[in-house]
Amino acid sequence: MLRWSTATVCMGGTLETKLSAAARAGFRAIEIFENDLTFFNGRPREVRAMADDLGLEIIALQPMRDFEGMQEPARAKNFDRAERKFDLMEELGTKLLSLCSSVAEDASGDAARCAADLAELADKAATRGFRIGYEALAWGRHVHDWMQAWDLVKRADRPNLGIVLDSFHICARKNPIAPLAQIPADKIALVQVADAPAIVMDPMSLSRHHRCFPGQGDWPMIEYLEAAIATGYSGPISLEIFNDQFRGAPANAIARDGMRSLQICGERLEANRKIRGETPLYLGRALPEPAKIGGVEFIEFVTSTAHSPRLVGELEGLGFARVARHRSKDVDLYRQNDVNIVVNREQEGFAHSFYLVHGTSVCALALRLDDPQRALERANSLAAPTYFGRVGPGEAQIPAIAGVENSLIYFMKDSPQGRTTWDQDFNFVDVPAHPGPLQRVDHLSNVVRRSEFLSWITFYKSVLGFTDEPQVELADPYGAFFSRVISAPDGVVRIPLNIAEGGSTGVSRFIENFGGGGVQQIALSTGDLFAFVEQARARGVKFLDIPDNYYADLSARCDLEPGILERMRTLGVLYDRHKGGEFFHIYTRMFDQRFFFEILERRDYDLFGAANTPIRLAAQASEQDSALRQRAMLELE
Ligand code: MG
Image (cartoon, rainbow, N blue to C red; front, side, top):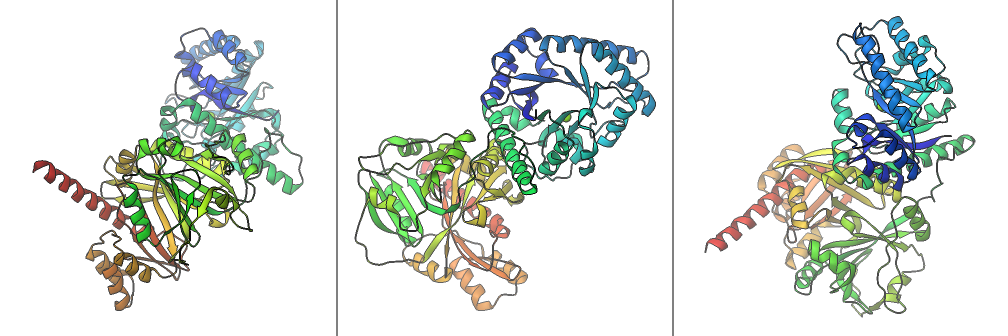
C-alpha cells in the first residue's frame, strides 16, 4: 500500500523523541537512520517495541555505505559488516537494508564486479528473508545517477534486490525524471523524497545543509512522485531530509511540517489524477479544499492604555477615524475605506498576553473567507487547531488559528450583504462621512526566525492554500536579508516572509525588540500618494528620512520629469518601475522599533519595490543608531 513515511534523520533529538514525534504527526512508517540506533542506549529490540507501541512500522534500516567494488580484504570485511546489520534488522523487525553507492577512493567502478557484489549481498540477505535497496548518491565515486544504479540492479538480477529512488540525488544531478516510470514496480525497493532550493552548490553540501520538505524548495516534487507512482510502486514514500535547522528545531514541529508537506503533495497528486480520470491513490484522508479568500478584513493591534494615544495618533495621522467601540471590551475600530484596524487595550485575555511579550504590535489578522468552517476543518486536518477566544453575551464567536509567534489568524465569513459580525459586537459611532485616502491592505510583511522560515512557508501553503514566489536576497547595512512572498490565490492577500543573516540586521533587531517574529510592515494602498503624504505630513506623521543621494541616483537611472523627482525628494517618496508600470511608496518611522506603515501607489506595477529595500533598511538602521546615540547621551547626562 502506498503510504507516507519519514526517516529518523529528518528530526533532532533522541531516537525516542523522534519516534514519538513521527507517530504524533500521523506517520505510521519510519526508516531508522543507523546513527540514531548507534546513539540509542538500549537494545535494537527495544526500539522495535517502542515503534510497535506507537503504531510505527520500521520500513528500513539505512544506510550501509561503501560496499561494492572493494578489493580483498576490505571486501570480506564488508560482508561481515553486512551480517552484523542483518542481526540489527532481525531485532528491529525490518526487512529492508538500504545501501548507498560507494564513495570509497579505492572502490572499483567495474560494473560486472560491482553487480556481482550486489548479487552476493542480496543472496546472503535472502537466506535471512531480507531485501537490499541500492541507491545512487549524487556524489558516489562511480555510481552517481539513478540510471547507473538501475543498470547494476538489473545486472545483479536478484528478486530481493531493488533500487532506492531519492528525489534529492536525482534532481541534484539533473537526471531525467520521466524515464523513472519505466522501472518495474517490483524492482523499486523504496521511494524517498526531499526538496531543495535552486541554488548552485556541490551536491554533498546541498544535501547536508539545504535539503527541505517537498514544497519548501524549488524542485519538481510532483513530477517525481507521479513518475514513481506510474511504475505501479505501492510501498512507502519516505521523507529523507538532512538539515541542520530541522535538527535544531523541536522534533514535534518538524514531524508536523513533514506531514503537512506530504499532505499537500497528496492533495496535488489526487487532483491531477482526477483531471486525468485515474483512480484515487488514497494517500491519507482527503483534505477539505482551501476556502476562497476575499481579503484582509481587519488588522488588530494590541497596546496598553499608556501607549494607546501614540498608536491612535499615528492611525489618525494616516487618515483613520474611530468608527465603532466594542460592546464589552476596551477595543475600538478604526476604518478607512476597505481598511479596518482594531485597537485592543484589554487588560486580560489573549491580546494582553501578547502585549506583555511583544509590546504594542499586531496581534491578529482576520481573513475574509467564503467558507470559514471549511477553512477550519482544513486547518484542523493539517494539525492547526482552532482557537476560541472569550466573548460577551450575544457577541459573535470568531474562530481563529495560531500564526507567527502565536498571533491569531481569524476566519470571518465573506458576506456580500455586509459585515454582520461587526454590528453584533460593536456600537458604531456617528462620524462625518470620511472616506480617507487609503484604500486597502496591499500586503503585510512578516519577520520570522530563520529557524522557522520553512515551517511558516509550509504553514501558509498547506493550511491556507497560499502559493509562494522565488526567494530574493537583498542587502542590509549589517548583513543579508532574504524574502519570499507568499500569496493567496488572485493575490488578494500577500505576505512577504523575511529573515536575515547577521546579528545587527534590521530583521534581527526586530526579532530582538519584538520577542520573536511578527508583522513588521503594514502596506496600505492609495490612489494619490503625493496628496496623501502632503496631508499626512500636515497632520504630523513622521516618515523615514531618505538621503538626497537616493534621488541623485534615481535621476541617473530613470528618466524622470524633474518636477516629479523634486516632489518625491521633498516628500521622501521612493520610486520603482517595471515593464512600463510605476510604483511610488513611502515608509513611516518605526513605532517602538517594532513596526511601520508603508503607503504605496501602484500604476500597473505588481512588485514590492524590492529595489528600494536596501535604502529603507539603511535609513531605518541610521534612525535606530541615532536613537541609540540619543539614549546614550541622556544616560551620560
Ligand atoms: Mg536517500
